[in-house]
Length: 432
Ligand code: NAD
Image 1 (tube, rainbow, N blue to C red):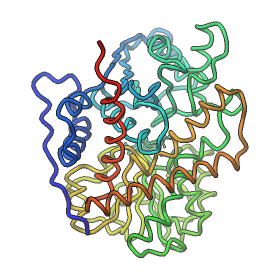
Image 2 (image 1 turned 180 degrees about the vertical axis):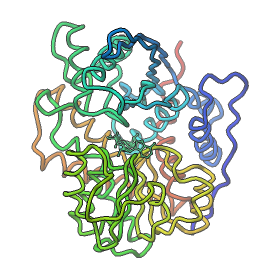
Image 3 (image 1 turned 120 degrees about the vertical axis):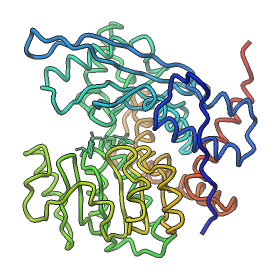
Image 4 (image 1 turned 135 degrees about the vertical axis):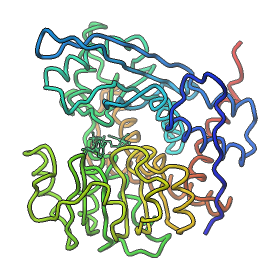
């Protein structure tokens, strides 16, 4: 097993605007690896903070017309060195500036790891999308888009779906932006419906991309991917398509969860039936043909592969010791805390880190942006084949770094991403 690098407590300095548990984690990981690499101190300092952050508050009218709520929204652009910035917009009740900043930083490394010409960005609106009607969701989306309209654009910053947002939300962002500039601009967002210039196979890209890496990850721990048992935390965009891809590869998906709880069948779930159930009933709760268990119980199941694909920080110091899986493929962003990472390394669990594992989403988003700009659309086979090639080759590069530098996969992925970004920063120099 590769020796671990000790986690560092990130020293953010007094009055740091971005202070939050997730930002601490992201900077802590960065500091640890940048120090190991001997990264230039000035570049290191520069990369710890985002280049641009927009914080907005705006009025949101509920369907009951007499109720107006003040809502907070964020758009953070971590790095503008490499090209436009790219990253999702999440709707969640607890999202804040620090969380969005951490996610924007992770996007920077992710884009660099798969070699797409973007810096990282992320957006968020602090609202619970599950409590909104369709009309309310549309009003929030259009107003938030207007609030950030001057900082997004196809050459500037291109949003995509993330937690709590979807193709429909992207369609409203695209429509609002297009109405504002006076003509249709499909390339302003990715992850939109194909009818508006969305790419085929974008919807499935993140989950599918995760599972493209299963055979290689399995080899690292001598697990047979055929018949390997898989548990997936989260059954939204990422979790659902990861489950479908795993099923198609003849792995055995035994558990999936959503915010209502988890369904578990040790003989294997009928993934298509579970997906249909959620389409019809919104949540997994009540799904027949499986035991209904607590969502967090997913992490302690006796399975070969664990896929966190919902929210951050779910594998932490208090449950990491219970993990029985030999492999963790991270679909969610930042699902494993630094403390949990240290425990899992001791247990010799092989982790394919978020910035590598879930990069299929931004990779096909890049394909979508290219197709929109060229107004020339690819077939599903072309998209999937190119996605596979990029994911597999990124895994190989990272694995090679892990072996040659004697570090874990997360550190190796960060080395690859940070190196590329630092090279670009140094060669561009400082303006003026
Ligand atoms: P989604 O909203 O489509 O699905 C989220 C899933 O998690 C749902 O099943 C939901 O019920 C569950 N969930 C939400 N809150 C939860 C909670 N508090 N506890 C337990 N379960 C909860 O979101 P998504 O797009 O699938 O994103 C999931 C994760 O993957 C996020 O961390 C996101 O940043 C990351 N990610 C998404 C993409 C993408 O292309 N959508 C790409 C890369 C990374």
